[in-house]
Amino acid sequence: MKKFLFTGVFAFVLCFSSFAQQRADALVLYRSGNYPEAIKICELEIQENPQNIDSYCVLCWSLVRNRQYAEAEQRSTEAREINSTDVRLIEIQAESKFYLGKNTAAMELFQLYLANVPANGSRIGNAYYYMGEIYIRQAKYQHADISFSAAVHTEPLVDYWWTRCGYAREMAGSYDSALQAYSKALELKPSNADAQRGKERVSARLR
Image (cartoon, rainbow, N blue to C red):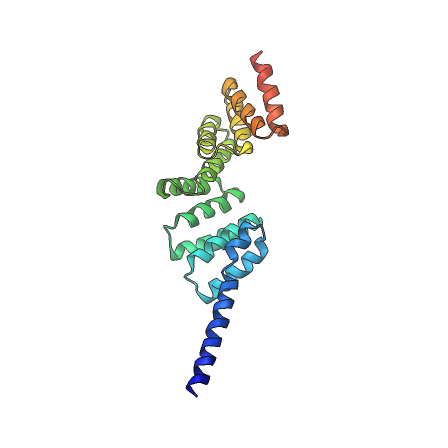
């Protein structure tokens, strides 16, 4: 009887462990670009444990990448009612608001994120990039230059960020530094048409 009971319990534990292991792949699915499936798994995990902040983070990241911005804003707001200081939630809530055009709220959250994130935070460059885009929306081109410059300093291999940095500098009338930024973007990606056009524009200005 004891042997039968032990065998049954052991089999249950193995089955549960296998099931839990399968459900632990939401982050892997997110990183591989399978956002809908990552969303489904995270929703199940949150149903089982409404305090699971890690699942909320992966859920919101996946919702944003799947362009479900309103849902990402709602779920990140829910998550921050559980933990208001988690920098991952602050940053992804800021992204959702950015894509919804809520510039002031997004800017405040990005600034809050940067004020609290550790120096090795993985999305520091992203935060500066989005701030730069907000400043461009507001026609604050020198501010945008500062933000984009911080973004490319943090992650210098993103050609699109260098292109946007060049554009901010061009719009601010800083043609020499705009040329440098566009040239760097083309160095990283020679087929970058926006950077090529920007380089041609500022080169004409400097002649």
